[in-house]
Image 1 (tube, one colour):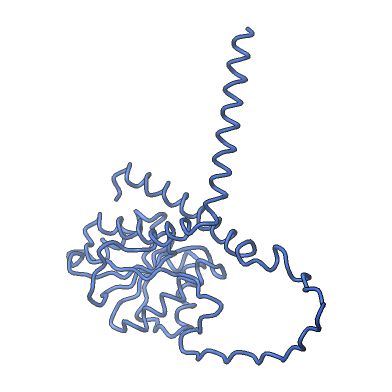
Image 2 (cartoon, rainbow, N blue to C red; image 1 turned 180 degrees about the vertical axis):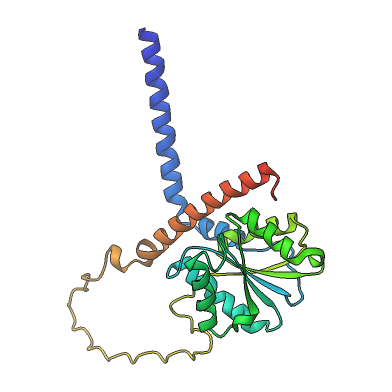
Length: 252
């Protein structure tokens, strides 16, 4: 009995040490470029097609209003503007008549200048695999000659491209829906001039330095980078799990 308890105690102790070490390592990684690099890798389409797309595939994300849905429709409309000959397809679980979200996607892109006659809902795709299959069915015999531009969240691009190629659609490229930097001018809008900097009076000799703005709030690493990288890490871990599952099922 005592030997069993000692073994259990050593096992729990080892597990706690292992979990603590993993937590410390995971925290330290957030202060490195690794989370962003892994996130950016997921947003790259391997061997993208070079020619203009014949079809723009906007993958259905969250509802509208919602960050994922609005970002995808924003970039979908931008892709439609760049490629005016391409058909715009929105992959959704239900048809436009059965889902308010499907209609909201179309309306959002129409407000951004995409003519309704260029857009069409690809229904009955509850996951990336099924959405790829619906697209292959829509393209039919012309799937091998068609060129598809994927518009989706950055972490979803690599799995989506692999799923499309598994169905026989070989010419694939991607436009990942990265968030625009707050300092980047929006498309079509010139950058605003920098605000004037008011003159500051020189400090008199012997004046102690002002530390009232120091601390975590003035550190961009602590205020933004750590939490952004933590968000990237969660997305990367979730997507790596999805990639492993898709590969196990033979879907990619």
